[in-house]
Image (cartoon, rainbow, N blue to C red; front, side, top):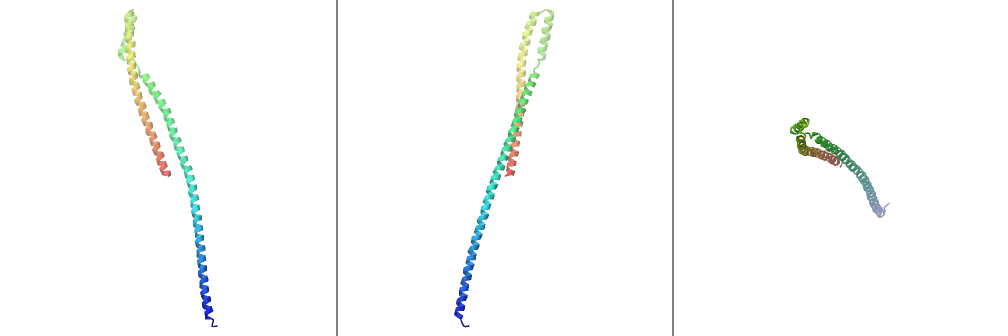
Length: 177
């Protein structure tokens, strides 16, 4: 129809409208993507918070159980140590026996008493008591020293047992983390 100017203007107007529509759609897409991105970020934060709560609870339960296990071991060891000390003392008392010299003095005292020599028997009796006291104290000291060594060995074994348990707990903690 010969209306070239109107056609050119219409074409130009359509082109402008398409560009405006494309910009609008692009801006809308950017807003929608930003909203989705912030929603995903919020979900990640919520998950992280929930995970941290669960992790804190889990680790506190682990630490509580580890403390309980160590305390139970220490309690058992204290009871075993008390029993070991008592046994060592009983063994030490059982080992206190008179020597051959003291036994010979006792026999001599008995012979003197039977023969009627009471004064000599009384002197020998004093020697027997003094010798028994000396031997008992030296034997008791040796037995107590032996018992102390056994107790120290027992304590060392208990320390190693505790250290082993703590090392296993540390390994468990590291694996847990």
